[in-house]
Image (cartoon, rainbow, N blue to C red; front, top):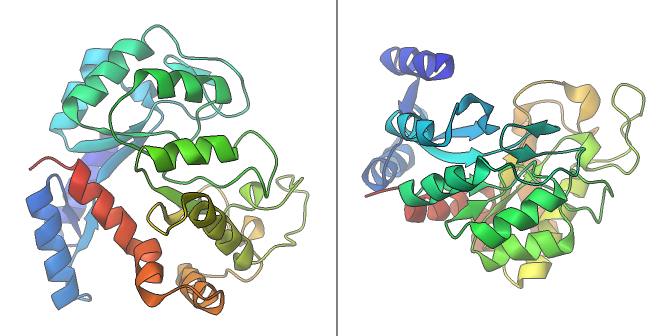
Length: 265
């Protein structure tokens, strides 16, 4: 709730604009295309880890404040189930929470679920899914990344996977605070390409970044110094032979399409 009040303060100052529904998204995109520099930063509220949801019905209060996407776990176990670096499944309380999330039309973020919890969610949740900041286990073989079977599940459910720039999700054997970065942004592009190859199209890959705090450039690809360097992804995709329309979809279009379908009218 503190975040919500901060966002509201930023809105009053003219820096941000909350997007709650399809109409607001369409208007924001139109404004951005007409005047990119003069349009406030548009945001859709999501939640990483549902520990703040004190019981399954409390999710309705968060929805009223604009919550439109949620991941129920983070690192380790919490009140709703197992997350990264554990193999705990779903807690009993997760079942009514998932029903409420589906009923409200909130998108479920599968990022940070343990493998066991992931497949339990797959069997029990029929709403829209995404993986906001998620890479492939093929390139960094530990549980934080998705196996090909998990990626294919998100594709089958018409979700989008956002490629992340955190070195622990890109470089095999990376140890925080110890390892030297031996990878470049091209490893991020390899992750994007892998999703596209598994899907047979470019509909399900996007940018997740995961650059919102907790580390600096010591834990990012060695050719990423500022947020502007993320634009290198487009250049690298072009060199790989991707069409301009597919590059635009990966850089922003797939997320716009996804939320234009998920958000309420």
